[in-house]
Length: 416
Image (cartoon, rainbow, N blue to C red; front, side, top):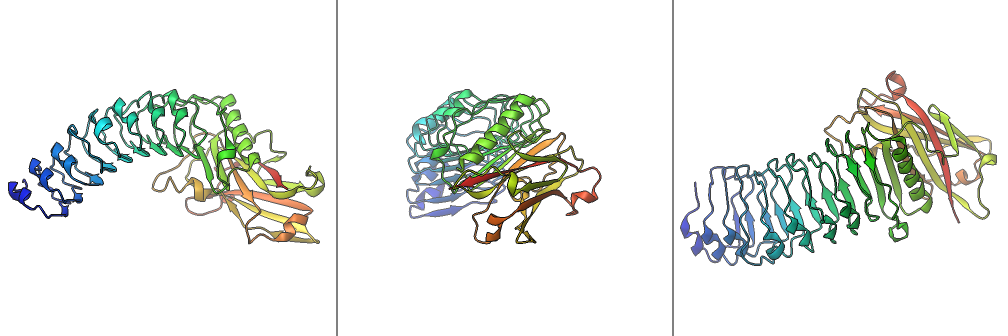
C-alpha cells in the first residue's frame, strides 16, 4: 500500500493522520511540497520500511514514528530542519542514526529511541545538538556504549539507558551540568558508575548486578539546589559492590541531609548496617530517643529526622516501608503522621517484581515543617520510631517470617 502521488496537490493540507495504516509501505517524496502541513501522525504504520528525506522540508515540530516496527532506515537530513523539536522512534527497527543530525536538526530537544532493540550506537555527532534536553534509550538491548564526549550536551536534563547493555559510562558524564535524571535500571552488564554531575537529583539503578565500582561525588554544590527539589538515589542488587563504596554512598546521603538542600530525600543502596553518623540506632525495628540525650545546638529548633532501615534479603515483593512515630508530651503519648518510603521508591517499579537479593539500606527524611504537624512535638520528652515493611498483599511484614528489619536508625536535624 502506498499514498497516491497526487498527494502533492493538496497544497492547503495542514494535518495528516496515517495512524494505524498497517499496510502502508512507503511515503512519496512529494510530501515535502506540502508547505502548510504542520501535523503528521505516522504511529503504528507497521509495514513502513523507510520515509523520504523530503519530510524534513515540512514545518513539523514533532516526527512521531512510534510503533513502525519495520522501519530500519533513517534518511540523511539534507538541509536544515529548524522546526523539528521532538523525534520519537520508539519500537522501530532503526540500527543507526545519520551523522547529519548534528548539522540540520539544530532545534531538536527530545530524542526517543525506546525499545529500539536493533540500535547498536548513537552517532558521535549527537553531542553537538545544543538544545537536546532528553534522550531515551531504554530497552535498546543492542546498545553497548554511548559517545565518549556526551558531556558536551550542556542542555541535557534527562538520560535513560534502562535495560540497555551498556558496560561503562564515559567519565565526561560528570560534565552534564544540567542533568537532573539518570536511569540505569536493569543494565545487567554495567560495571562502573563514574562520578556524576552535581546537578543530578534522581539516579535510578534498580537491579544492576555487575556494578563493582562507583566513583564518589566530590563535586557536590548543594547551595545551587532549590529547596523544592526531591532527591532520589535508588541502586539495588549489586553484589559486586564493596563496603567502601556503600560507606561512601551513606556519607553522601548524610551530607545532603545535613545541608538541607532538598524538600525530601530518598536513598536505597546495598548495605548491611546503619551508617555510623546516625546517633540513635538499634538491632531490629524499634528506636527510641530521649530529649535529655539530644545534643541540640543553642538557639536551634528541631526541624525533622533522617530515618534509616536495613532490610535483610527477602523472597517477596516489598511494596512499602513505613515508620510509625509517637512522642510523649505533657504526660501523654501522641502520634505523628506515618512516614513512608514506598511512594517514592516503588512508583517506578509498578508492573515489575522488585526483589532484593541482598541486604539493602534505606534512608529518607521526615521534615516537621508541614502544616498538619502537632506543635507539641517540639516540647516532646521522648520519641519512638517503629519501622515495618508492607508486602505485595498489603500484610504487614511482621506476619511474614522471611522479611526482616535487621537494623534501624534515626538522626535529628535542626534549623535556626
